Image (cartoon, rainbow, N blue to C red; front, top):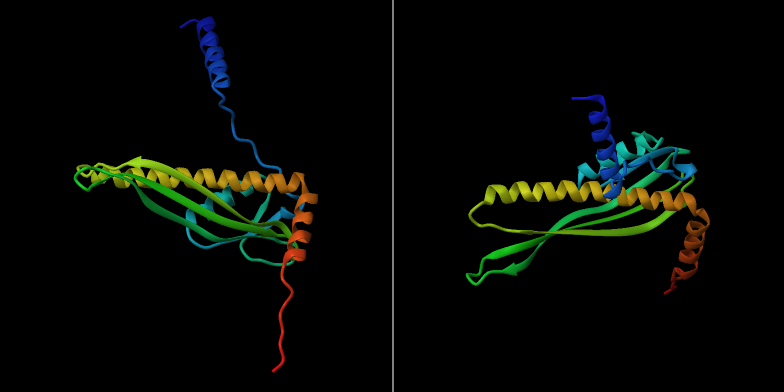
Amino acid sequence: MSRVFKASLLLLSTLTLGACGFHLRQSVALPPAMQHVHITASGDPNLQRGLERALASSGATVEEHAGADIAELNIPVAAFTTDTLTVSGQARVTEYTVRYQVQFEVHDGAGQPLVQRQRIDMAREFSYDATNTIGTTAQVDAIHSSLNDDMVQAILFRLQAAGRHPEQTAAQAAQAAESAPAPASSVH
């Protein structure tokens, strides 16, 4: 093949990818207090591994243990659920939805909130074929993996927003402290 044809093909491929909206994922600008971070997660270990890789590629050092001057990314909830969407005339399920709910919060090394507890919900729908149960299991696994990848990106975007707008995080913390009910006490 000629060099001109190869160069034209490369240029055409690049323009096509740019036109369809494809962009390489960039690293995320994390809040300065998250240079060292420890992740505590319950539920799905794949989410924790994905977050560790993503944070490391964004320049953070993921620490194995919590400590002074180490931010804490706490994920108390990371749960998949499956719900029935439609049922056929023979009373067989034909469509499901897989839902993924994650709650997380971030505190700096001094225990001050960087990101208040937030909840992210995602869902994917899929058709169920009773004659192909093996394919369905693989399909559900692929959906779980896709939701995990999307959840990692959603959490990173929220961390980046907290780094860009730290005054909003401080205002939210102050508002939460003001709206919290005063502790009740009684003497009998």
